Length: 460
Image 1 (cartoon, helix red, strand yellow):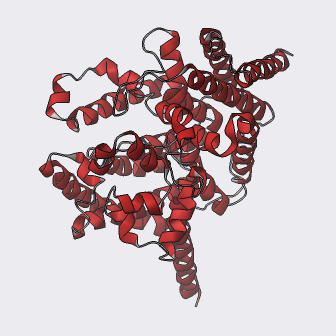
Image 2 (tube, rainbow, N blue to C red; image 1 turned 135 degrees about the vertical axis):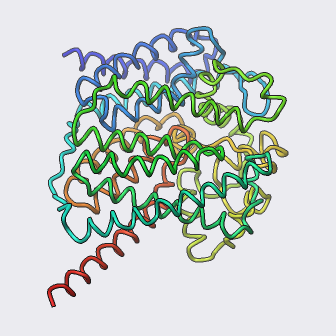
């Protein structure tokens, strides 16, 4: 009964705020909506944890969503910072119109999320069984062991290469594209990631999971020291999700790991800062900077009417279009490998590139980026009027797919790849999972084929 009243309240709140926006009553106090949002987030998080557990996909998504987007509103509510004062590339204060629409979009997310979670029960026990004595599993772990030292040495080389220039942005400007070992390092890391995802979908032993994960995360830590932290965060959440499905984890044991990750990410941020920024570096500021991805949506709401992008592919679908453009050589591969160029802007409509160039052209050409966000991409495609409806459809699709993932290993692997994009979608393009799934699928088919051939050879 309480749940129904709460959902009714969220619906009425959305309708009320929608009326304010349609009538352009920008002077209505945003503090009321901020208060409602913060309290609603707390109630929804408690409800989600109690119903599905903290290690479920809804709980993890809501955590990353709030960290990257919702915390922006919380910091304003606590008078720590003004969520309309931007920090990406320059300091400015955005309009009250932007504030109302941004709050309305996030209220729509809460409503859609609450509706979706209310009607789904999440039970991720496998209905299929991978025999850990099978040829497939033995081949998988053998390749994992083979790749671990190779990836480690290549990542050490790439880290040394990046540190030698003193500028981590060289990774994004195409500075190292001519270096064979650097290219091998990136390629092997993709293969290694794919092996690990298949392993996660296959293993049913906690001891085996912990054993191989140690090697994997050691490599990811080395990789992350170059300044690219997102992959480590995603695989950490993926590991927790799979581990929690095998056996519930005591939340208190995870807190020290999360705290250590925060310190590690802060250290990376310090190392990749310029000398002038190192002098003004504050650990507390890093907490506020977690919410920087919210500025992508804020900027898009503020400036989208000025038409700062080409009238091309919707931001949401750009990763798919880019993938096929590269696959069929419709766009020269070098366009995507040569860093931030004007040609890249013309050939790809990735929001991060378009927005960074619009905000600060020298920063774009230097290799900086804003990242993207599903909030911004959905707003661009559906406007604020239909945002919550399509976000609800999106969540239903995600949770339906998770249900299917228990049927066989192909669905499970697809789900694990999508899961990572799903929980990272508040700060990057969701459909990037498409380009990540292809190498995993190809590797799975290769492993299946090799194991079948070996079994036929043994039988003959």
